[in-house]
Amino acid sequence: MSAGNTARSTLAAVRGDRVRALQHVLYRAAKADPERRFHALRDKVYREDVLWRAWVAVRRNNGAPGIDKTTLADVGEYGVTRLLGELAGDLKDESWQPLPARKVLIPKPGSSERRPLAIAAVRDRIVQAAVKIVLEPVFEADFLPCSFGFRPGRSAHDALQVLIDESWQGRRWVVETDIADCFSAIPHEKLMQAVEERISDQGVLKLLRAVLRAGVMEDGQVRREVTGTPQGGPASPLLCNIYLHRLDRAWDTDKHGVLVRYCDDLVVMCATRQQAEAALARLTGLLAGLGLEPKAAKTRIVHLTEGGQGLDFLGFHHRLVRGRTPKSARLTFLARWPARKAVQHARDRIREITARERLLVPAEWIVQDLNRFLRGWAGYFRYGNSARALGQIRNYALNRLALWLSKRGNRRRAWGWGIKQVLLSPDRLGLIILDGTVIPPRPFRSWRGQAERQR
Image (cartoon, rainbow, N blue to C red; front, side):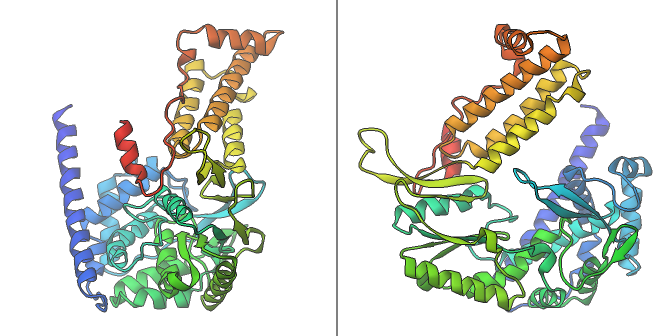
């Protein structure tokens, strides 16, 4: 490593340590006094190290340009330090104003539906990320254990573990739902009231209001709504969690069952049908008080029984099954494997990578793209009873690679010739193997601990 790279790495580490120290101070102060309202945060937002950390987060996300058409590469050419210095000056003298976001529609994985995404300008994403860095530790001190989505140190697999544990204890009546158009339906004024429970710094509140009122550019017109957080913006998941914290703290676990919320996706694990019906009624009422409602098409009560129906949650299908070994044959437990939509999304992505339009791409690039996708997909779904699904997806990738090779070679017996080329290769042309990577879930055993033991 050159001296210049070493110096830059050291500087980045120092900046990161300072930002973490700031967040720890804010978290401890908020945790120590649940009634405290923070009034001196604006100067933290435009600190040089905070803005740099925000830039790193934006760059890592590798997003598209906003309406100003400025890309991440353009920022590199312009000079990151120069841009961050300008942003710090604008934030300090309160002259920063966000541009409207660029609205695009992107497909939902495994579905024909499309969801709106608001792409802010790079400059504005950096500011949003900086605000998130400063506010997140304050609200993390208040967030409850039932909330899992977009929180540091918590993940989808932590939420999935709760389903395993509660099912094992007999809570097998499940309310499943998600919030209809949650990100676009949150009322601005009620959201700001939730923020103001902890934040009194008018400079920060002004920044948040500017972000919410920036609007979206659609068909050449700027639309400014009185509801919604810009879906796709760095601060939006935090703002969503801040608002839905009102739901979390109003929930009575003893009375209505165990709530598991991953941002706007929710399930409630209940002991009886009566409790599940009461939980659904309570959930609907609480959401109505927040100006939200459950999505009717995805709201139902499911009874987990052997041979009965299951439910989809966080990409997995969950179903009660009986053990297949002599020792486990008397036991029923909640198993999970990739849901149909997740499998279809994987097949669609593999088809895209091996499409006819990419016949001129070098074969090693195709394999590299397939491996990158398979590692990510299997990295998530291996924490389940997923061996069969992972094997099917890997075989599908092999077949698609063989078909791609045949088309590239212009062979008449396309698939047969291509599969021979793959199978005769010593390492399947470098395509990764997914066998042996599955970690089945166990009640009251952390998935993290099992992953560490496998390593």
